[in-house]
Structure formats: structure tokens, C-alpha cells
Image (cartoon, rainbow, N blue to C red; front, side, top):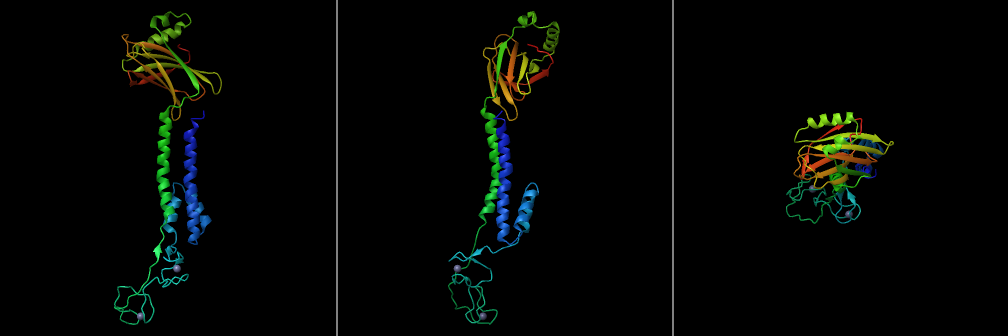
Length: 292
Ligand SMILES: [Zn+2]
Ligand SMILES: [Zn+2]
């Protein structure tokens, strides 16, 4: 069933997507830092639960993330001028030429007075590692989006491939039916007697036509459900298995007996019974005979 594959497909995407992003990032980042890019990419990908990636972030060597503000050339911390455009990056002592803090009053090397020296200089700027933030955001957001999509798919009620039919069965009609064996009737009588008011009961018989196609025969008893004013059957694809919804309305009759047949080429459907919009706990007993 194609719809059942959607969550699996999404899971594959998430399983592939995040490691690919992490791998590309580590490879490029390690190269920039003159680290062994292939080795670190493998470590980041193979060590599970992103632990390899975290280790990489902790041990990666520093590299110059400084840039000249005039020409965007990469510069090192110790540079006084940009080697590319000659832009002055630091304040210097006019006598000996060493880099000095613009707030210093006296040069620590040659003892010149710096207090009247005003210099124009534009310090280098740090480049921000935006890619890392994007990856961290993806690691958090992608699973959230996937969970959201799975919930949407689960709630959207995509029809399952199969059919179902349901009809109300009278108690007298059932016990007088000559097509139903005496053993079955005895079993059902005993089953009905042990039912309590607040549950819905079902006997389920599974009949396999072949590997994929199965028929499910249900005899459903609602001790407090009443006769059905309206029976609506809905089939929707659950996360792992299809679901059949049976909505009943109370009438003057106290109890109800229904026969339900589901023909499906999927997993065993989940049965949900509501009486007057209230979801009822359902007690299903598998039997090896057709109770309907
Ligand atoms: Zn420059
Ligand atoms: Zn000096």
C-alpha cells in the first residue's frame, strides 16, 4: 500500500538528509583548516548520533576567520597592514613601528609618547560561520517537520485499499439462522452473557484469500450501543495499519449486534467504534470460525 510507505519515505529522507549536510560541512570546514578532510568526514558520519560531528567541532583547529574590511582578503591576527590592499589594520607606534593598543599612552618597546598620535586604521572583521548554524537548525527542525508530517498524514484519513460492509443483525434472526452452526451459536450466546455495559465486543475471524488479500469477518456487540440509527463506515490509513471507524447512534433498543466484513489488501485494520460520538473501548476476540 503506497500510503503506508510515506512515513518510511520521510524517515529515509531524514536519515539521509542530515548526514549529507553534516558530511559536506565537515569536509569543507576541515579543508579550510588544513585538517584531514576525508578522515574527519568519515568520523562525523560513521560515529552515531552526531557524536562524531560534535567531536569534530570540539577538536577542530583554529584558522584565521579575519578579513580585511577593504578588500575581503583573509588576514592573520599579527598583520599590521593588509598584504593585498595595504589597508592599515592596527594602530602602530610612529617611532618603532610595533602594533600598539590605541588606548596606550606610551609605546612599551621604545617608550615614545603615544598620547598625541591619532591614526586612521580599520581593524579586520570576523567572518561568521553561518553554515554551522544552518546545520544545527536543520538537525533540530527536520525531525520536527517529519513528526508534523507524520501526524498530518495520520489524521488526513487517506483511504486504504479495500472495502467493507456492515449490517445490523437481529438477535432472534441470528439465533434462528440455519446457516449458522449450533456450536457457533453456543459460543456467541456465552460471549454475549459475559459482556459488560461499558465496552464494545467483537469476534473476529481472519480469512486469507492469498498472501496479500484478506477478509475479516466481525460480529460486533454493543451492550449499550443501541440499534443503529446511522452506521457510517470510514476507512483511513493509520501510521502502521488502516483503521475502520464505526459510528453508532443510540436508539430505544438497548443493545446492538452487527456483522461487519472487511476485505483488504493491507495489514489488519484497527476497528474504532463510537457511540454518540463517544469512543468506546473495544474488546476483540480472534476466533477460528466465521461468526457472522
Ligand atoms: Zn585588504
Ligand atoms: Zn615604539
